Image 1 (cartoon, rainbow, N blue to C red):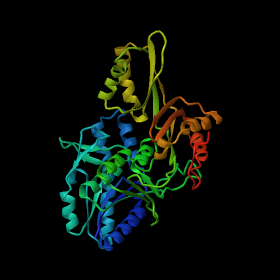
Image 2 (tube, rainbow, N blue to C red; image 1 turned 90 degrees about the vertical axis):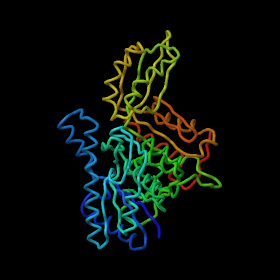
Image 3 (cartoon, rainbow, N blue to C red; image 1 turned 180 degrees about the vertical axis):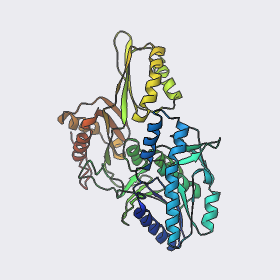
Image 4 (cartoon, rainbow, N blue to C red; image 1 turned 135 degrees about the vertical axis):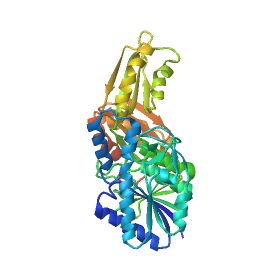
Length: 412
C-alpha cells in the first residue's frame, strides 16, 4: 500500500463534470489499495473572479482581506470533490489549510510555508478516508488566513507530501507534462520524460506555467519526486527528480518566456559605494522581489540602475520610488511594463561553450534587440520587447533543435 498525494489544478476541477471525473480517478487509486491525500485549487477562473470583485469594491484592498477572500475558492472545490467521492461509495473528508496545521509567515498574498502539522491528515487516512486539503493557503502565528501566491497549490501539495513522507506526489494539470517550450506558443514543443530539479526550478521561475518555482524548491530540499500528469488521460507525464546520471545530457532542455514583469530604471544615481544598498533597502522592506538587475557605466560620477519586478507589484513599487529617488539624489525613475523575459535552460550549458553566442546571434538575425542579460550556470535570460517574446522563443527553440530528439552541440 502506498500513500499518494495528488494535486488537481483549476482546470481539472473547472466544472461539475470535471470534478466527477477527478473523483472517479481518485476512487480508482483508492480501490487499488492506496491511501490518498488530495490537494485542490479553486475552480477554473474563480480566483480571477474574486480579484475582480475586490477591485470593484476597492482598487487598493488590504492584503489581509484579499487573503480572506481568495482562500474561499479552494474551499468550494474541496467540499464539492468530497461530495463527489462520497457519492461513489468511498468516504472522503475536506479540510482547509489552517485546519490541518499549514503554518506560514505573515506575508499576505505570498506567504511561505514554515511547517505542517500532519497528524490530523494521517488520523483520517488511518480511518480509510480520502483526505482533501485546500491548496494555496495556511495560517500565520496570529491565526490570520494567508495565501501562497499564484500557483501556491503546487507548493501545498509538495509540502504535504514531504511532511507525510508520501510515496508519490502527482501534479495533475491541463497539459501532458513539462515541455521544451509552451506548446501554445511553439508548435514543435516536445514533452520531456524527465527533468532535473535544477532545470525545472529555472524554467518555473523564468515563466513556465506548469509548476510554481517554490514547489520545486521544496521538492529539491526534501527529496520529493514529482510526476506531472494530464488530468484528462492516464498517460505517463514528466518526472521531476534529482539530476539523472546520463551518459550525454542535452545542452539546452527548454526555452521559456515571461511577460508578467516590468522594468524599472533609476537614472542619474550618484556613483559611489553603497548606493545599490540604499536603492534596494526600501524595496526589500516592502517585500517586493527583484529579479534581473543591471547597473550601467555612467557619466560625471553618476550611474543608471535597471531592474525587473513582477507587474503585480508595480503599483506598490511606484508608491515608494519617489522616496527612493529623493534619498539617493537620483534624477528620475522610468517604468516599462511592455517587456518580455526570454530564457534558455539546461544543465548541459555549464560545460559547453558558445551557447550565449548562439542565443545572441539568433536574436540578432531576427532583429530582436536585447535590453538586459542575466546568466547562471544553467540558464541565460534576456529582456526584449514584449511583442517580440513569442518570436524569440520560437527562433531559439528551432536553433537549439529542441523539436528533435537530438543533442545540440554549439556550432560557432
